[in-house]
Image 1: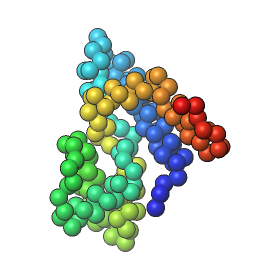
Image 2 (image 1 turned 90 degrees about the horizontal axis):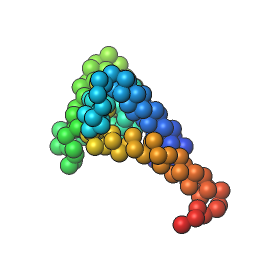
Image 3 (image 1 turned 135 degrees about the vertical axis):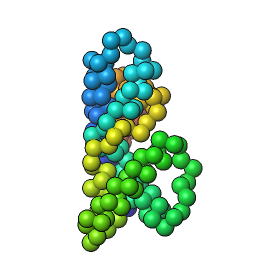
Image 4 (image 1 turned 90 degrees about the vertical axis):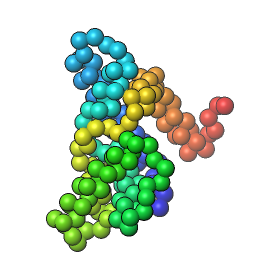
Length: 152
């Protein structure tokens, strides 16, 4: 089932707000600012939720349940799915009547111990947020739906 684009924009906006919250916190805590260090501290700081869709997390949890190995995946994503799976097993004990998707949906909205991004990815996100890249993408999408092609 395809996701509605607005929900992707909502997800992106919420993730970006969470990153900027952590960015402001780390800048306030720093006695001196070295951006690669700040980006690493952001990556390692607690996030408001797991920044993965319910669908993707449910697919990975289902794969783990039947013992399928991870597809080629970066170590931080693997670590995130392992944490989601650990929480899934515990929650399934408490709520055995719920489906994988229902349980995973609860879990991905719980606070996460970290962002599970690399420092480089955090830096790219922060740069794009600060430079309005996401706003331009949203405007381009809105023009497309209104039947107007954005200028090339």
